[in-house]
Length: 236
Image: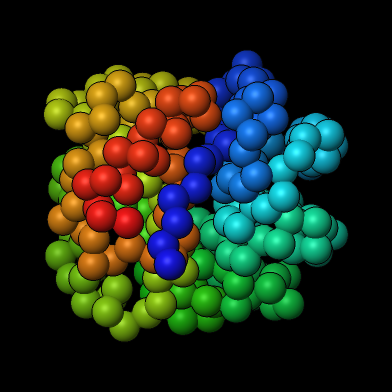
């Protein structure tokens, strides 16, 4: 049975993710997806400590950071929150990645972000693909990456273990990348204004995994509305 998970993202530089932690018990949430992608090891320890103070029971999906994710974190998340799948971006050093995460590689799925020469090799060496539907959909991404021309063939050959789902805007909007310090103009966004910004998912229904994680910065209260809307338009 397919399930849509609210996503606790950590993109905002002002620690906004702590507000989502507070919402967990306020809204009676028992399971979420976790995106600690922008937190360093000490910040992640703080996050785990705050989560333990809530009544949260399950985190089926976690987006890992390849540069510093430690073994104890995998074991902790699997034991404490029954995590089933992890996802990562395509590693630049494939051999190093496989060696470092050999114990967990069958539970790690590679996200279609950097569609470089490593992508399919990384997918082969791990559990399969983490299909970010907004990356596939956004027009500017299609223009930059010709690999998407035959992407559906790739999806037919490998397991899709989890989906990311963000908003697609009708026009390009300004986005400031705090890691590069540059401004970009994109169709995809981690902030949703109108529910219609997820309508694009209907045409990709064939490629929905059992776990569909909302990668949105919106508060959980708003994400619950998105979840309900998606369940209706996707007939889940």
